[in-house]
Image (cartoon, rainbow, N blue to C red; front, side, top):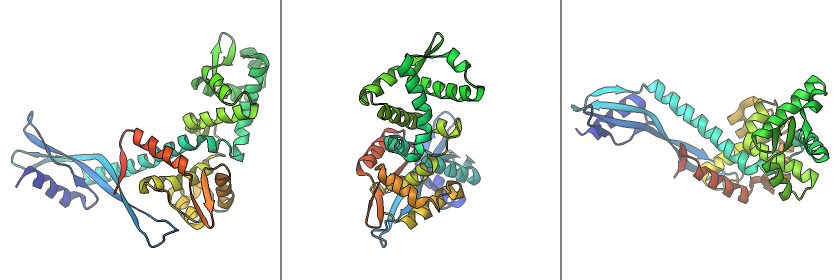
Length: 309
């Protein structure tokens, strides 16, 4: 029996069909063979425009564990099945989070134009207007405000400072380099500049808006957008869903926390309105330009889980 046969036999006996094993490599330092565990995890993706077609893809998940055997080809140590399955589950969660980050980065301009973004724009608009009036927001000005209001504005200013949109110097906040760059692109139009800044925040710091600031207005839109584009990225092509399929997939991926069952028609209309999705007849499908950008972002990221035929 070869080392390859030995590790494959062990994997089949202890891990089941979802886990496979790479070719073992010989470690001359301790005279052992070591093989990495992996999984080509199946994904079945459906397209309502071709309901009888099954799109079968596999997520290639690596580094799930190892099997070590001795020179006599007897097992010495191996990752437990429980640990291996847990690693598999963690990698699937990581792929879901990574896909969501890709989708948010590509769709930030679209998400910034959703009606629910107006509340966040109000805070950003306050800061922009003050800067345009005096070129600076003094610490003393913030100190003169009610404590709660001053605290919120300081948190926003710190967020903007981390993105180089504002800079804190001496006794106040002034323009940052990114503010100037976005202002030029917006041609100094107040509304366009506010939206551009929000888009940049969503692109670079969406998790901070949700977690640090407790802003959840955009979350349901991100969930609905992500539950479509993630399978599309796995299928490596645009797919077509009706509203029922959207409802089923959002519940499958996010459960009740998205609370979209009643609001889903409105959410879909908003996503179509800002060109995050397209709609024709009864079908919703992706924006081709955005999807190509998502594919590029996915390819640029370090490989963790990649679709394969």
